Image 1 (cartoon, rainbow, N blue to C red):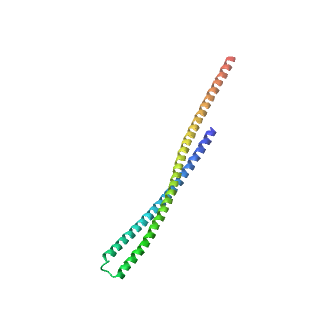
Image 2: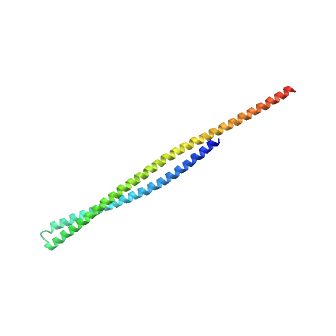
Image 3: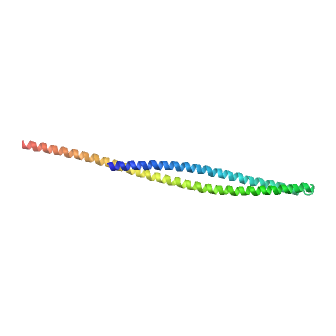
Length: 172
């Protein structure tokens, strides 16, 4: 009976530890998911910036075509310089997109690892709960066996007393 109760207490401690591990793993996965979402937002913003520069360049190139015959060469040169400067900005924005994608990929890896730990913690908790259920059944079985033994001992003691009484009665 003592061993069954010790096994049950140990199983309960394992369940408690598994619940704590799952809670911690879930909290970490939530943090990593939030970091991933932030990285994705930064990537979206960087892609929007690239699109903005492409649109602006296309617009200025259209100005250049439209004003080719009607504007001064100085104005046309200024448009060309503006387009060149925007292309530099576009290149920087494209670099930012590449960096943002690296951050997203890294955040995906970290989040994936966190989710794997969370899943493992869930599996461990399931196993710990199963072990606890078995330990509780063993404790209950030991208690039943102990009660049956006590009842059997009491019946045997009563039979012994009855036998003694019958022997004493027959001797008298």
